[in-house]
Image (cartoon, rainbow, N blue to C red; front, side, top):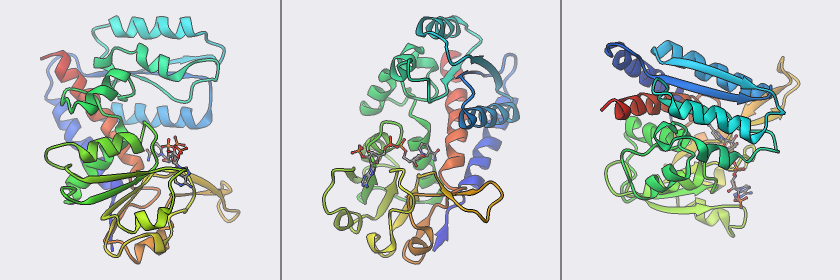
Length: 290
Ligand code: NDP
């Protein structure tokens, strides 16, 4: 079994972007983060994105709002950032409080500054295989792992567990695209899928994005398959200082005995998401300055 080191791949991408950005004369790429409320996970995600941007030389701007912000106030901020030519990328940290419609907020962002790739126009660009579109970061990160690890998807049976827009559905569209690093035969499974094990056992590449701790067991995996575990689940663990540990959607110990390659949790797909966000920001800058 070969462990896929997502941390190392993400760090290589950050180094490549740092070189690219340092070669830019004048104004550097700029990303604006909007965070509403003080949800600890959101605070920590935005901090980590901010830090990586700074490391690369991308200018980060952080705008924080109280949980009570109205949709009009939020939209006014997005509109101002859309209009500001010095801002190349805009990210609204999810989740938003329940009185705000998240998809409406994402759709308010100028699609050419939508570096998270959640705007309806960018979802359409994925379907149309438009290279100038922005692909959401986690599915794009999985494709990048495949490229850099020499995992060929062409002609392979890729089974995707999960059909969310931010992971499963978008990854399945990318894997079935025409062209290099795609051309897979894709099966998408979800909570209503019957005989899940029969399907997953046919996978040459199995991508798990369901949010169910260690649900994918060894007997669900074909000998020699590549296993990409997207899940990030907290499970209680009294032996840890913080009282929990992170596990994926795959039972790692069982899968590791059967898979030819596997991503760990943490340290697999997770770190790729921020790296691709930065890649999208540099791409937005390039497209806006072309
Ligand atoms: P969602 O809850 O939006 O989607 C989960 C999907 O899994 C749904 O399509 C659901 O089916 C399906 N599902 C749930 N239970 C089962 C089951 N028993 N059998 C088959 N399918 C099932 O989650 P996300 O896509 O947002 O996230 C998935 C996981 O990936 C989570 O653990 C999340 O934390 C992690 N994640 C990691 C990221 C990273 O950076 N590494 C980024 C984003 C997410 P149905 O549609 O029928 O409800």
